[in-house]
Image (tube, rainbow, N blue to C red; front, side):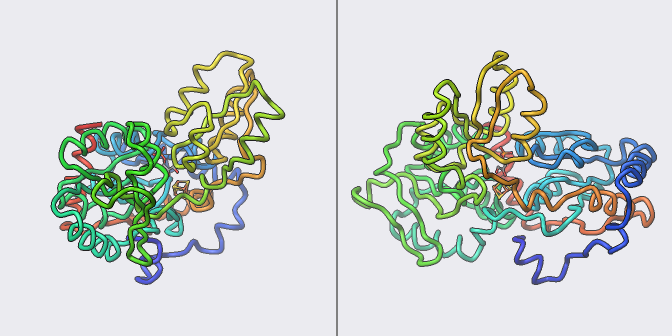
Length: 371
Ligand code: 13P
Ligand code: SF4
């Protein structure tokens, strides 16, 4: 379900005003108390982009791939309070048992990229593209997408991908069919395919607003990669100007970016890779090394704090955190936990319908097996 759908169905409950008055120490103490009381019956997964005030309570931290793998393994937690964004909580719900409940502390924690593709647009695009290319396309979707799109992909023989395994999954997809349709992030799709040796002129962009395929040069039948016209509004804020500035002012500084950045930024950087790749790269870097990082700001700030022996800056000095990830704060976490502790069930439960879950899990499992 997209954020817009959530708002339309009124399935969102807002935090009571009184939570805004509770002093921080009190919130911390109460969260600790509830975690102790519930033990393994409660699980708090936290994505690396979450704020420190939330991450301190996470039972497991990771990128989206690690969090889906760990959620799939956990059979003990009755309540899973997911500190991340909506599509991640949906994925956790689909990969856990029927007796395990998943909650999102603030329903406004969506992902602007996931909202750039809806199921109606996807069905229209598929009809159009298969009428042009016949049965030569396999659909792939970045996990940053709604459960309905994952289900669509599963039903049509495709798989989900994350930024950590995109290369393996795209390679696998080309063993199945001649062409891929990659949703919803054009940049991850383009950067991954380019990395695998596919030239830019064999890639086109599907515009879901005008229902048109945009491309230059190539003949239609030479196209191999059909990219959905979506992007991450956070990672698109890293620009060539930022790269030129670092090259001029800090010539010894290495530039390390996430593949959701534009192709231009990725090819002019020194290294590009997933959230986990970025963390590992910095952890394994020698003392005194210098890094300009192009990814979400909560993570960059955490890396700066954890590695005082290295010089780390954000590639864009005016960068701010992912605003939807930032919706989850101490007050929302406490509210979610107190509802569970006091009423036996939390608010804002994420429940994906069974028929959607079945096909979406097919797409997720193909990814978990291949990558
Ligand atoms: P990861 O797949 O690297 O966790 O990234 C998720 C995300 O939302 C990046 O913007
Ligand atoms: Fe979505 Fe971008 Fe935020 Fe990741 S950083 S959750 S892709 S808006």
